[in-house]
Image 1: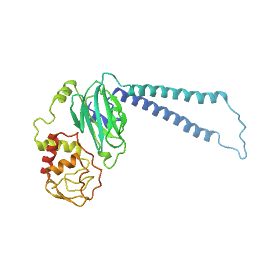
Image 2: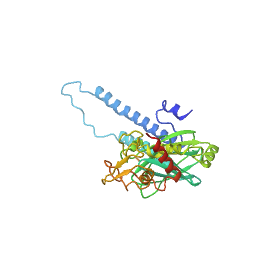
Image 3: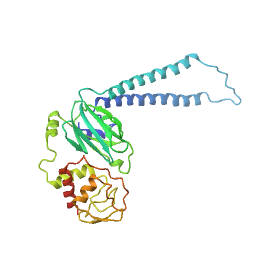
Image 4: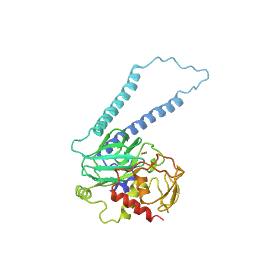
Length: 314
Ligand code: CUA
């Protein structure tokens, strides 16, 4: 069954790892235990209210001191339930946090507002990444700006991604498919658009993907469009509408008024500078320091691709 087809009919999102199934089982146990307790307590309350209501005017309740047996039972039974939940949860958390040694390691870099994934082979991708099925994968994550959080509902993980340090997370997907990655920590205007996809594929497909040139057979404009979809779309629209950053429609060749009062023609050099050193010249009406630098993240082919793509947005 494909993840998409099964999600709608399920109580929780599709579970694509063993740990996810473990969390779901614990969650179901907690839910059922809570429901039973709720029925016992509220039901008992209602029964007692009716059964022991005052039937005769002026009737007094006899003085009751305590019942050792009852008090023991209502302390001991919950204690056993809580210990079951504690040990069960601890075991799951232990599995969840214990990094396997033979895992495929992927470096994850978060910045407002996208995700970049770097493989040991040197391959870097944004917006989506691939992993082989039934193999442990370890993510070593860091942020370039603010606190983000890496969240894949199908894996039931959620791990903060912190600037200035690494956090780790591992998973072993056991179902082929494409799963949604969310940012689960509010990080600014486009937090809700900080998305990515994780593709779980067979080992053969993964090896083929990893060794392929991602831009094989693509024109420079197509490369630019791909980069746009992965890196720029959160802030720059393809209309002339003002988003977090300026819309791209008709931008190339236009005279832009800068915040410092100067005027610059949006040519190749201006676009390149805006991508690599965004605060050098900020367009009037936009706050400085919002656009992150993409220096070291985009290669020459990708930079040229974006410039060629912008030229086509008219
Ligand atoms: Cu990154 Cu929210």
